[in-house]
Structure formats: structure tokens, C-alpha cells
Length: 290
Image (cartoon, rainbow, N blue to C red; front, side, top):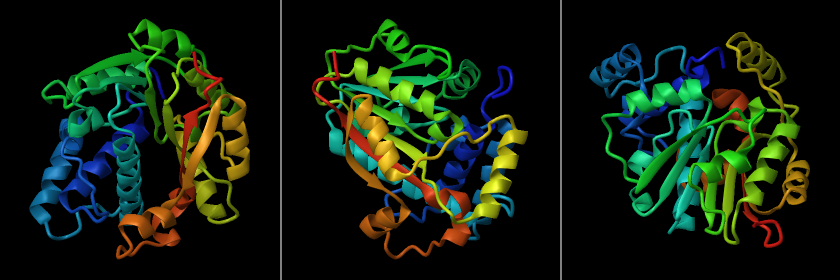
């Protein structure tokens, strides 16, 4: 993040979701609000892609494999939310240009808290002004995960620690240190009532794609959003347990494809570094909440 500008990675993900909505490949994927989150220039790119259909909507620099991976990731997280319904409170950590509060009908009785850096948040609020929320209410909470206290900011914004909360943390942990990840999970647990859940994405340590990992790391540093951490499964499970969470599942692209998209052709080479990104899901331990 540089200054008060919106995150470059958040904007890029909104772009590939908008392009993917034109010609979805992962069964169940749909994001009709993503284009509204884009700048006018990037929105025009989506309209040009729409005019080229049924030719692939992705420009040469936006690899199809990575885009389809993100469709699968979106569907997997949407399903995790759907399985937890009804949800009284949904906290989206590092919300970026996430459109779930505007597109998931199951959130009609849910108060959504979107937590993010104030720069990205200000841009998102402006671009989403013309959209009608599906959620009962959206509250925006500006904070920096490395310096601000989640357990202070969210209750001050109206989060009720006596009611169950679903915590969604997509595409963020890899940009934080392991200590900041642990601190955030710990503070979330401290204001989570029994029945609360969390779903987060993380990079798994891997010996594969070493050159690509280096290339992506350099690119991330150049745009001011360096990659800072990865976990192996047991390490993350242990960390989560130590700060108040019990694991429910830990899945990756091969699991998602087998469950709801076995016919979609996708390989590690096409996807690149994100092939090693996984979704960890857990519930708060009874003794950890308020």
C-alpha cells in the first residue's frame, strides 16, 4: 500500500473477477458487481472483453489459469459462508473490492463489517455507491493490521461480541508477518462468541514454482505490497489453536476442483504461484471467546 491509494492487488483481483463473470469456468462462480468496483479505464477494458465474446476475456498479461483459480477460491469461500448461514455478523478482513455484501442474498439478515486500509476503503466506498446491498447493513472499519487493535476497532464500530461472527480473511495473510497473522487471529477470537467461524487463505510452503515465487515476490515488492509469510499445514493449525481457534478444514485447489469442478482443465503451470494457496477454516474454541 502506498500513501492513500487503493491496493493494486485488490484492484487487479476485482478486474479478473469482472472478466471472469463474462465467461465463468468454475461452476457456481458469479460476480456481477465486480465491474462496478473498477476505475472507468478498467471498466472499459471489461466492456471491450464483453464485445469479443466468446473469445477469452483475458488480455495476454492476465493469465487465464490464475483467473480461473480465483473463481474456484471465490466459490469455495462463498460455500463456506453459505454453510454457516444464518449469520448475524460477517467481518471481512482486508475487504479490498470484495462484493459479497452486494451479491450474496443469504446475507439479508447480516450486518457486514468491511475492514481495510483507509486508502482502499475510501475508493471502494465511492465506487460501490450505486450498488444496492444484499446485506442488512454494511459498516466500514478503517485499520492497519500491523498497528491497530482489531478487538478495539470492531466493537467500537458495533460488533456484538456476544453474538456469533463469521470472519472472512481472503488474500491477505501472505502480505503480513506470521506474528501479525497470529495477533489478528487472537484478537478476533477474543471478541468471538461460541459458534463463531473463520475462513482464511494462506500460502503453503512448497518446493515447487521456485522461479515463479521469486518473480512474484519481486513484483510484489515493486508495487509496495511484498509477500511476507507462508505456512505449512501443521504450523498454521498449531498457531490457530494457540490463539483460540480449532480447525474444521484445510483445502486447496485440487479439493475444490474435485468437489464442484472436476471437468475444468487447470494445471500448476497455468495457475502459477497461487496453486499453493489454500483455505483454512476453523471455529472459535469455547474457552477463547468473551
